[in-house]
Length: 281
Image (tube, rainbow, N blue to C red; front, top):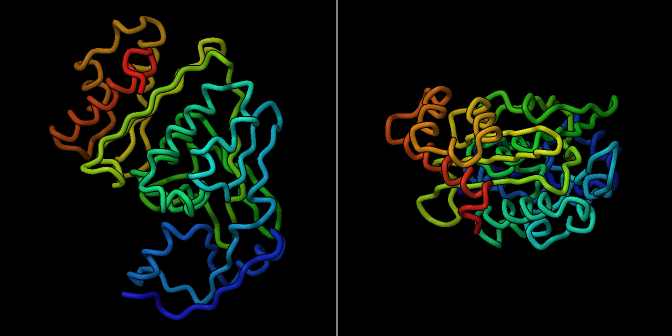
């Protein structure tokens, strides 16, 4: 199928985009919205192109952390566009490159944007899980001003977010992590390029005393495995057992069958082994 007829208008500024969004839907790279248009799952009368907005592409240090423009493409992040900004935290830069490089195919990464993926809120999406693991916050702009929403509060269900009518996701705010932060990120797909059937992400920063471990590809937002994260942070690799991972997954992944829970547990175990330096690729 092809999309129903719509009007297309590029926005020259954030202010113009927000004014136009009162009667339109935003489009960035179109890698999530495009298929929905073609399947006629959505039929907007007007699309406002926000992919070139200076505000949505600006990346900078801010308030003890980092602000990444929502219009940054997966390919740009994969290719190291944020390395200079994150020079004080090379491990964080490496994690973002790793996550970006595993999204779909290069053709999609060339067009798909960070904000587009987060706003679409597919439970199996990479950035949804990674930004939760990083304890990020999202910058949501509207005609009445800008508000900041923690990533943990942004997604309330599959394809359901805190975005209000007329709001635009313009940036992602990352907390500053120490140079010694460690991370793991593992996902299972039937074939390269597909959305994950099971995924896990971990971000530990011993200097700051933080340890976050989550699983993704659920029926809704990612789920925290805080007890297991604390055990691994305190006990090290000895706490990374298949049974411990399976017990942690079973406590939160209520919608999965036995095979699904086992797959998630394996993802968690490999993710933690990667974080511990036992299985880094």
